[in-house]
Image (cartoon, rainbow, N blue to C red; front, side):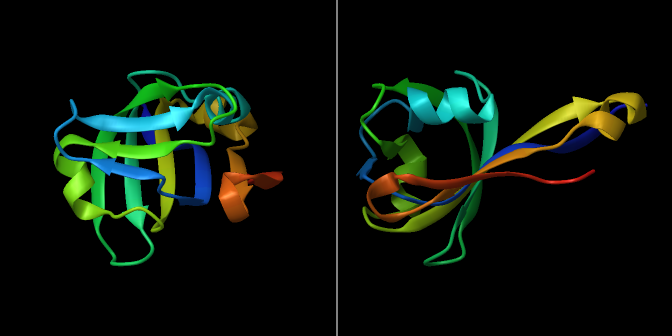
Length: 122
């Protein structure tokens, strides 16, 4: 049996832009993708810590080192620059895979700097 479980997370990143006229997605700095194992076109769930909105979209790669967290298309209407968001990436795993999986979490600081990288225990 496959279960949908947390693969990785970016915790309390700051939205750097909201672009409603852009093709939909979330643009994430390539450094953050590498650090979490998230990939372009992967589906993510977003929680806006400022207004409680929750929604899903897919990932676009942002320029490495840019610290970009940009919401595009319709999702851009659910955030504004400066909002804090939690980006959660899920993956389908067997019980065997889950037993050794430890989700990687980036704890973000001011200016979308990575303050800490932690791993959750399964």
